[in-house]
Length: 134
Image (cartoon, rainbow, N blue to C red):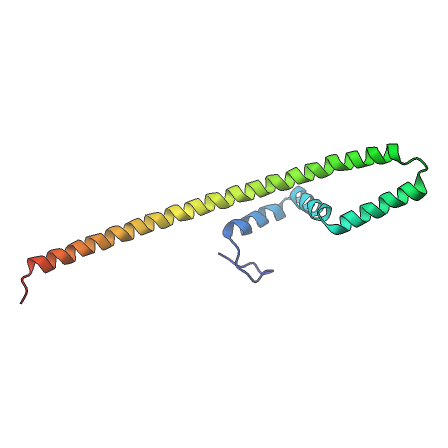
């Protein structure tokens, strides 16, 4: 695992790769920024204030336009939620693939070590049994 300059704790190689890929794509950076803001309390406060002001001071009958605006916003926000879920799914798959490859390599290494230990043990037994005790 590696440590990125901006963080002091080690990060999984897939995390580093995933962040680099997302940082390289303008569309993904925009989607990440919108998703991060839409999932925050300032987003809620701003919307509550704007809708309150609109209903109280701007429109005498705000419900038709407000319904349209809120519906359109819900469509876009649900799209950003799906983008976030797809991103998370892709990340989890990349991490699972990386972990699988690492585990397979470790299993192969352990198997090779076990075989080598078995071979050495058999050789020691052969030498001890073939050589009479003095």
